[in-house]
Length: 289
Length: 315
Image (cartoon, rainbow over all chains, first blue to last red):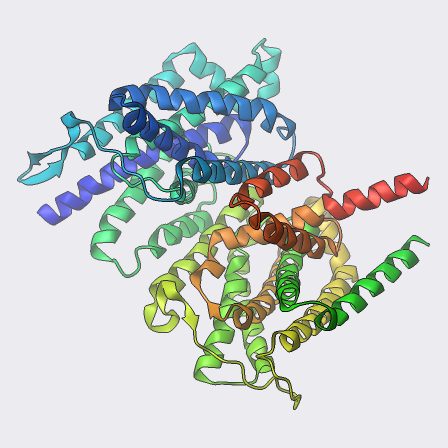
């Protein structure tokens, strides 16, 4: 029981962290029709900014959680205005290539600024221990990740379904010309959505920092994971991102424990199976295969 | 007139390439060997990307399988090199048939994602199937014996190996070129521009895309078979998605609309890498900036931009 329970909890914290990151990728794809290859790099940037704020400036973890994502969102606005605006009207392939270029630039900048070694961020005092849950001890930080994930999930649901800003985003995603005709400044929406996606990636990065060691390859790892999540769940779908993240979380949580000799293969196998039988993802809608 | 000048230029380049071992040091021989092999890899990729319009993010699967096939045959069977290359091509053709059969039905992003998934599956297998692939260390310690066809070549000599690579890449490039110029190649171009129209004309788009995918995979496998003895190792990095990104970058850099574009891209890529890494660690930063500029402003690539500029000047 405790083995399965631990695997389940592990799946949930991996899954919800992946959700935070992948949902940003999905929102950006939904509104901008851009697959942001640099999304993982923005996640990494969030983690490294938090590292600087906490370990070098001496801020508390909570301040870093607030400030680092804002910093990354500002950078995203610049990226959008300087680079991405050229390719909005082009093929999706072009956006993959341009954001791949941005990924290379950010990766190398991180390597130059912070070095290629491994950096460690300590969790705040409050979250560093472990608690007894269902008869086994669980790291408090895992529970914190789960809580943050659920909070963001609820917040995003509220944003998209109950607020004007959310409706504008959904309108822009459905039909940008129509939204424009209804006096919505879609250019601002586009920039805002890109920055929001980057903010989510960076929040994921700060939350991940105390759980995982920081190294300049961490962004590349997470972007592939996020691709798997959005493909399994459905590109552009909000509930899909959640479902995909939980599925991948389960694959990692249980696969790592019970099938260690093929655990690298499993996520890609899952992704390929979904693409083969339901190319638009489990929750994906419309669009021809 | 224009084609005559270009053909002349090409002849000079080829003559220069043949003469290199007599006039340049081993350093340049190594660089040129790498350029030729990666050029073939990128050219094979461009058959599906530049010609057919399919952006694959898993092309390294075929390159890597080719290198593992040659390494395995050299270790266990010690066959002549030419036979190894044939095995590499066969193995990658087979893999491309399976992956392609499942992938070509999808479009655009979904195709890119599915090829990425399959590519990484092959990577994961090579990484974790230790008894055959030696895991993350890869296969090393193989030596090249004879070449085959009764030719007496000392393949261990970098200059000789360079000439072998030059000859094989040249033959492969001519074959690829003939394929691109054939009516089959024309249909591929038509598919890139308008797949619906091609299928309305009564052609099976999916079959054409699959055949192109298999041909591209086969030539990538050949390039992989050539790279293993050059690197002296077949390792999982050759299968990783970041290796799949290299031919994409090279094709874009050189120009996807031109047959020689990927070769130009490979040359610029390897030379820049060598040159910039001798000054600074941040080669990827420079590459990122160049790629961004190419995608935004020079979508035709270096070759395309140069040719445009040349026609402009002549007017």
